[in-house]
Length: 79
Length: 240
Image (cartoon, rainbow over all chains, first blue to last red; front, side, top):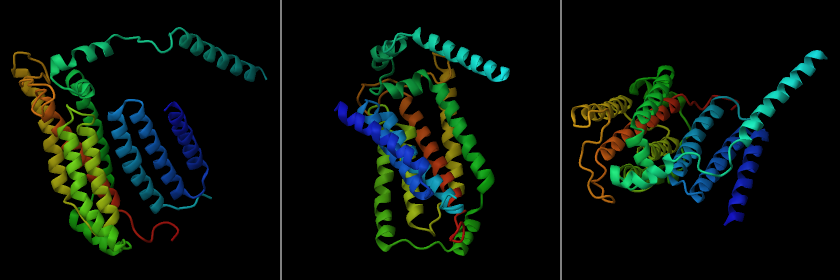
């Protein structure tokens, strides 16, 4: 169990770093959402289901949607 | 040179102060007894099986009202910039002519939508029994609306109805709080309804109506924000 939690923490960091460094902004936004999803799984494993639900619906769905709209309205690739 | 020495000394001083401050706290111990108090007395005092709900609405109900005000301000800000009437939005969407999604995606989203809404309502109604509550359920409902908007470019929900719903839900919260002033407890947001048996849906007094109000308000607010933002997308924007 503890190794699974460590794996999830590592995954969060990897997704966050990738979303900062990728030049394709749409992929970066999707990775950010994936990072939120992993964080919500972590919340669930660490006995905080209320926070996990908020994180999954706000962080992984609504925030990502707003970022996708912004990417759609500006440019997809970072120069 | 002198300046950089001064800066690094100053930085070192701050770091040392923070470290000393942190070392003074024992790691991993309970600093406050209030958490244990909640765990021991919540079911007895409020009748809610979910301690988190009891804390957010019963012990800290006024803070939740403040949070709703913050959310209301945010939604109003988005509306101020992006508001269009429903007819204008429909016209704009026709002009923008977003690419239609695949048939499976369109029909599938319409089939799943009622179930997502039902799940949101379930989370709201069971806020005082199981994890979740008004905020989470409202966000689930809004993500259902988001799915509908993503899959169907020409869909349009009634924005004005959403605004009325949102206002009425906020008013309900304040009115339930004010009703507490006329009960023997004589305080804002006092729990004046019977507490009932913990574990049943009709328990925990005013927590259920309060969470329904919060859920409706959060759901309609987020849906309104999504509606406002989606009407601004056009196919010609950006680099394409």
